[in-house]
Amino acid sequence: MFRFFLSSISTFDAIAFVIIMLATIAAAWKAPDRIRLIGKLTEAIFLTSLSVQVLSFIIRLPWGSGSRIQTYFCDDFRAMTALVILAALAYIINNILYIIRTPRL
Amino acid sequence: MCGQGDMTSEKIGCTRSDIISLHQTKHKCFMEEELIEEVIEDFSGPGPLTILFQMVPPWILSVFTILLVAILFCGWKAPRWVRPLGSIALAFSFIPCTWKILIALYDVKMAGAVSPNAWYSCFNISSFIITLGMMVFLISRIIIAIQSTRN
Image 1 (cartoon, rainbow over the protein chains, first blue to last red):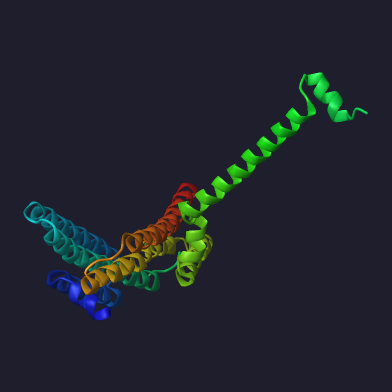
Image 2 (image 1 turned 120 degrees about the vertical axis):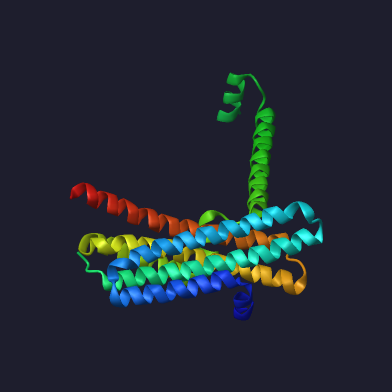
């Protein structure tokens, strides 16, 4: 199942979120005031990638029929769910690092 | 001898047997209503609270409860941590439900199709988990708003 999840992630999302994770860790180490900014960047990349995937599905929709639509739907939906999980993990890590590196008052 | 029932039946202008048959009909109708209600309960599926406490895994409910308690505690002692905790709750709510959808898609790939009931239960539980996350997120935002009006 985990292998299936890894195979569902598109290349662009994988590269983008690896860079974001590294940037978050670097910011938490050297510049804690930038962690929130990187969180906003994560949101932006997630929304952009999701909208591109939805758009690509909609564009291909009129040319498919029957089982082909089901194949498109499954492939695109797989990539979308993998993207959501990846973005949620990145966002959770970002917020945890923010809590750790920010004074409570 | 005339009983109290006979006197009543005389007063309302009908015989005792009429009243008995009316009572029996009413009882029968009541029994039928009960039966219909039972049948409707059987076919309408589980209610929202049943879904919440029986179908959503307990560890997910535990995580949301811990986050809610942490938010309430931070609202008192550490106001700057309320916002990230609410965001964590919202982001966390998307992980289990999308994972369930991914499992369903895996089944589609392996078996070729998934029954509509499986899709229904998958989306039903997913929507409940997301609703829980959004409620915790909303509570965190309400606490932030209350604190900002105080200061």
